[in-house]
Image 1 (spheres, rainbow, N blue to C red):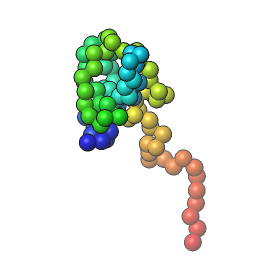
Image 2 (image 1 turned 120 degrees about the vertical axis):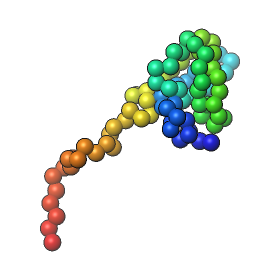
Image 3 (image 1 turned 45 degrees about the horizontal axis):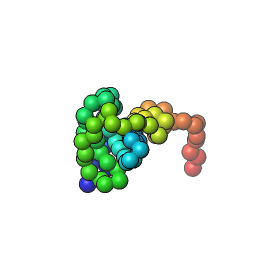
Image 4 (image 1 turned 90 degrees about the horizontal axis):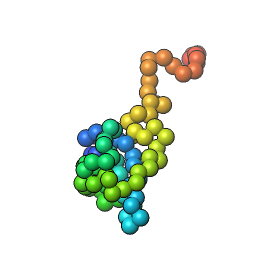
Length: 87
């Protein structure tokens, strides 16, 4: 499996979890209760794991915190610049 599998299943928020003994680089679902037990995608091991959130400190490296929230390449039907084709 790959990160793409996790993203397609809704695990789009990047998170770094640390507790002093272990560092995990995860993809989690937006809105996940980090103080609960939850399912996450381990990007290093390329597998789903279960995390006891209360055992970790979390950081979120992505500015938007959600891989699918970036709309910089979204096309709304209007060109960004005005251009003309001449033949």
